Image 1 (tube, rainbow, N blue to C red):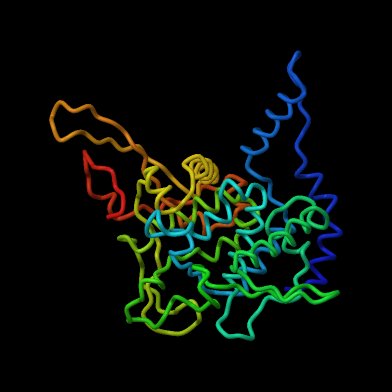
Image 2: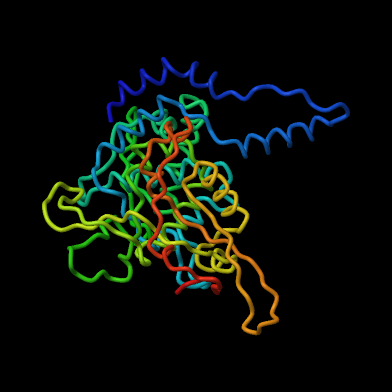
Length: 357
């Protein structure tokens, strides 16, 4: 990244970006206490989709252009095999104890993971904290935002999710560690045509998450919900199309995922496998639906007896075609053509809840 150019862009656009993103004032109802007004305002701001910061979007696009491949993320990052196992890293980053600190931690880790290369000499170097703060969509990137980034780096180092070589007077060198915290990072992709070891099974976060500016507008809970849904549905009857060129430019037969299946995540699975609360997940999904990154549909089931009472549950699906569209175009009202999953062609009147199949 061009740190000097980015820093100058940040300084010149800081006032404009903060003015554009400042919430408008509203008159309070008569008799409302100051504490109630502040609580109501806090809820409104938390539910409101963020406005796009053009400087941040441009910076995110620059990051996305540095790799042609999507970001492989080991399933151990989001999922644990049993309740006896420690919480996965995702839950540690965005859980209830993380609070507002979860967003810079999660986005910083994902970005270094996206840029990662194998080898002991690889690192992210020379990136100011203000630049990271802008990329993550934090407020006051040259002030409080930069402080939050430095705190996030320290927290990731304490979790053994990252190594930081801090040098006096210079920006720290950052090197990401494995998603399961079991040593230096190595690529889980492996060699085409060979079986993957269980610890190297992975899902992929589309490079459009950076290239199209989604990293700057989505909250930590929305990113977490997106990663959980990708983990649950990746490689489960996903629709793919052939490609003649791989992401690294090499020729040969490749297959690109174009549509993911519908999935139902019950509360017990969220807690047992992913270690997150239903509230966090539902609030993240609500935000993703508002951006049209996720769609939902109600499904009904019935008891095995004909007189059993019917009940409903919700299925969710990530829309990869929207993730591969610039966030600015979605905010402007662009309607992206829906790419449905092949299973939708099969009409099923009754279905039992889907868990780990």
